[in-house]
Structure formats: structure tokens, C-alpha cells
Length: 65
Image (cartoon, rainbow, N blue to C red; front, side):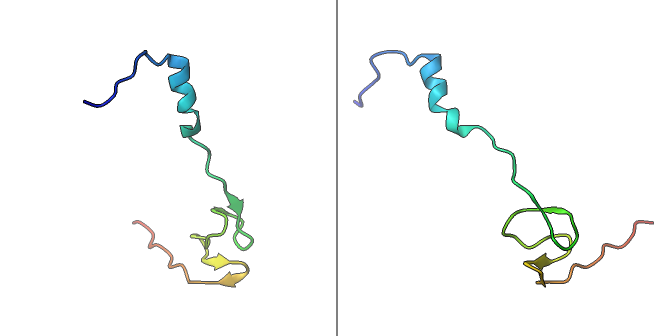
């Protein structure tokens, strides 16, 4: 039979153990080409540029009628 805890873990001790599980806001930076927000160290999904170079071309979505 596995060992069992001898005493109840208090709510404060239980919650302190979960303190590092809190959500953090996503860090965004401004794209140097199109001035829209993007993830750092990622290609911009709006214009396809990274570090001043065009990595891929972004196709325009057709307008809804």
C-alpha cells in the first residue's frame, strides 16, 4: 500500500504551490515594416517580413460580397 499524507495540507500551502501556474500576458512587439503587433523573434503574419527581409508573400483575402 502506498504512503498517505498524515495531515491535511492547508489551503494556503496548497495555493502557494500553484503560484507559478498563473497566466502571463503574451509579449508582443511592433513590426518594423507594417507597424502591427507580432510575436518577438517570429515572422510577421500580416506582411511576411522578419529583420527587414521579406520571408514570404502574404496573399490578400478576397472581399466578401
